[in-house]
Image (cartoon, rainbow, N blue to C red):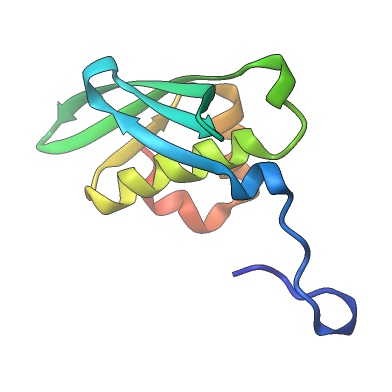
Length: 113
């Protein structure tokens, strides 16, 4: 779903983004962002059932300083939101970064409470 730029070429994906992966760690109630074997950041959450609907509250997103400014918080948030979608849950965005991300992506409004 990358936007095509001048000349029909796709924008280059930074190497750090190519090496990044989001891992769900349910025992610690967080999503982890790993870059080339190093833990680069976490998105903490809690879950509850409200009127029969599973709600995942995103509490905070933290990246280690050396990984900031490279689009990795977006990558981490996108991975965590995909989990919410895949599990047919809803998200309560307490985290300011997640709220901002959802504001910039109104197509995801259907998963918010």
